[in-house]
Length: 151
Image (tube, rainbow, N blue to C red; front, side, top):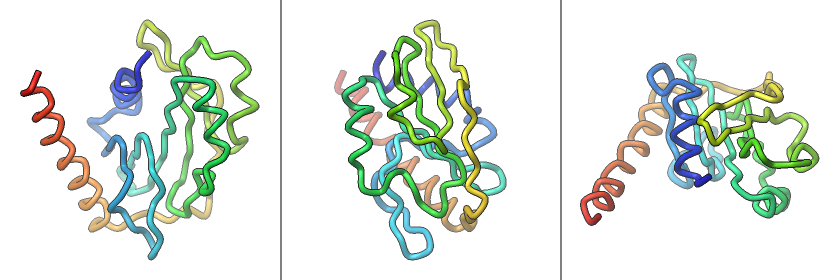
């Protein structure tokens, strides 16, 4: 399964009609004077809380993730999930205990295997920051349209 396939399935699972969901946030979002680390999927709830989904399509990528200095922690992230293909074996030991786990099947199903522990100290983002996140997401569309147009 490719990352883009998982992104699409996860965006539907988390309901992109109800939540702002932006893929590949890697720059441009500062919260409380601290930049947000790279997020595969960043979800903003209706109450302006952020959830991060880290997508892993290989075990080597999952194992390498432990070396990231930020550890997927930021005071604005209320919930952290790791999404992995359902055929992964023994993956749990490589995922932080606070993170939820979602398996994604070849048939397109997303199953929550473990609920994410809520960061009770997480701060909601402002409406201005939410608008900026939406702007980052909208900017991605034009690069994708260029790519589709070439093909």
